[in-house]
Length: 356
Image (tube, rainbow, N blue to C red):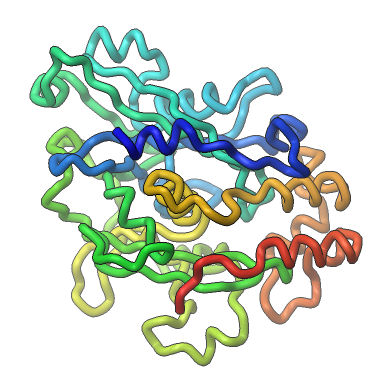
């Protein structure tokens, strides 16, 4: 399959042309990994499994995310972190032999992407895997045997989306399932950042039946306090966004990942922020449009090396200021980095494929 080959043959670019990722230079408490689990859908399309985070979690409650979490030790690899967390969150075993024996499929490890910087100052490495079925196993056997279970302390929902829909705005084509896609150029600490949102209906005709049977633990009601807390985790916008149309204004970004559309009352999933950026970059790689920068290796390395940050478990006062920064604040990455390095990063991350 050409799309899978594109992922396998992709050559990641790390910080300062290093042969390895900055991930291994950070303390384990700042290392995170997520698993991007791909599989073939009913129409032969590549689909990706996503989860809705529990509203009880401290960081990014209620957001749509990829299964994943933090490393337990310095010796744990990215794959080990991502597979362990996926098993804990949705019940897909980290043991390929067990999967093959009991369910007739295994998970091929295709590629580890460069690091991304989370809003909470962790380095996130996406691990891309593919559900590979044996030649003698039909999907009906999988449905009969595989039982995915949600960990109520971690996840409250699970669903899948076509990966190609995340290719927007690199390729502006009609989506197969997404009902709204947006991409805006914003700034976090004066460093350019892409803020993307991909909205999907919760009821999808092409959703595989083995995902239909999972009990959804999503909360139907939420408080104004929950809503405000989630909005505060949204990267700040530029002044120009205030001039955008009502539909494009970013004031409502950061809402619950699972909610009702304000106009149609249809239940929707909103895949936005870091998860959206990771899947957008993977879609570019998968479908042959992998130009530009994938990940934020240079920014993470600069923050660690030049800014002397991301070195301890606890967030430093400087990190706390950047986490809570808004457009009206005068504090940014320029306050922790040498001027020339800050200007280099600003130029590096400027541009992209944003379409307003």
